[in-house]
Image 1 (tube, rainbow, N blue to C red):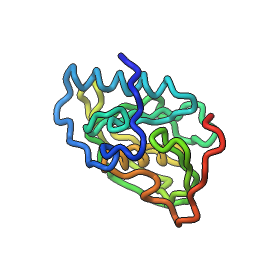
Image 2: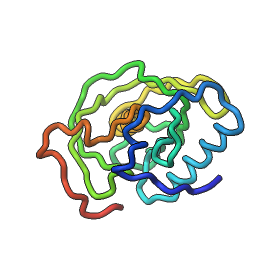
Image 3: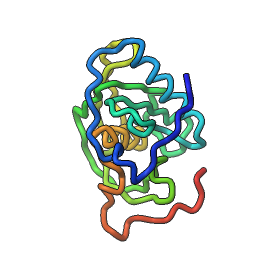
Image 4: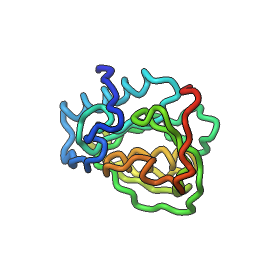
Length: 166
């Protein structure tokens, strides 16, 4: 495991659609471990996608454990090749991102989602999430599609300078 540097805007890697992982082997498990280690090294970080550590593969980690806005919580979730199966009930809420460290923005996202992907053990996992965990899943899937929260802000006036990164 290693803590890797986080890629920040305007790095073009963040705007590129990531490649499917396909199968899960030692290389992918090492990537998962690095994603977890890097996420855990950042205060208040609840998710990280492979492009954010310079790897253009469809993989991410989330963990909303203990977050005050979380209702559903599946603990630490690492998924390869995630697919959004269901998305319902969009609501606008504030988001930030390690790769856009100086800004936050109001983004409409579904509050109920079903996401399917492959775990580091190579098993299919289906996650039904709501509220903040659903938002975190969608935020990370967007990274894999080359989208940042800035691409989804509800209006140009919905971007704000970050005051403190806690």
